[in-house]
Amino acid sequence: MASEKAAVIPKKKLAQKLGISRSALYYQSRKKVKDEALKQEIVEVMDSNPAYGYRRVAMALELNGKKILRVMRNNGLKPRICRRKWAKKKDLGLPIAHYDNHLKHLEINNHNIAWAADFTYIRYGDHFLYLATVIDIYGQEIIGSAISNRHNRFLVKAAAIDAIKKRGVLPQYFHSDQGSEYQSEEHADYLTGLGVIVSMSKKGSPWENGYQESFYSNFKLELQNTNRFETEEQLIENIYRQMYYYNNIRIKTKLKMPPSKYYALAVKG
Image (cartoon, rainbow, N blue to C red; front, side, top):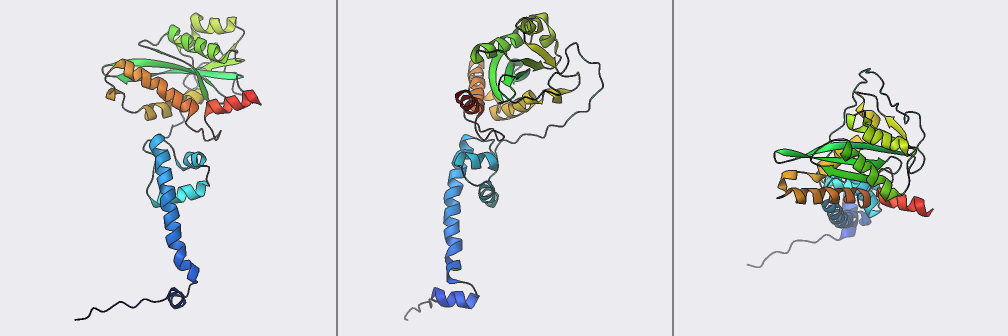
């Protein structure tokens, strides 16, 4: 029995039948091909930068953000690491510290005007490591750091000294919270002796040092499970790798580039 061939309708007649232009028959298929190619590019960027949302992906690919958002939504592409919303706490009305918050009404319009410092704990097995960092507020770059098994005045001072050595200049203001480590003579008097104005957040007001709060929030998420490392040395190495990634590779949305590149351009210009 002879096989019957299906009738092929010419695209011109099919378009007339559907009440659309002939070019519209090609549009969807071409668009799908382009979107599929773009999807692969997006996936490659997100694999290397698991916390990137559509804005940073668009910056990395130098493409329109709306287009990236559409393709990501259509393909269910989301950052593998998402930051929790940081709830702003109420001012508890606690007494003002010996050091005022000089940054409250300060216009920070250049690098090295104000640096902010803080430290955080990183759990490893049954104990903690403590990471102290110093950030240049204007460019959001981590410029000083120190790691220790103890959180004390020597830890925070080591991070401050590291920042001064790396930048080769002193800031006008050095901001932190009112932790005893930062109020100690070892740290505060060291800075004032150099001619730096010490600034501190009001007690119970962590959002007044939100520069560091924001960094640590992202940093811990992107560092992920610390117990996957076999030794403490491996963990420390990856802490420094993560800071390098933050400074030199990870695009800062506000800057549209990594912080270290932003500083390098400012120094050149």
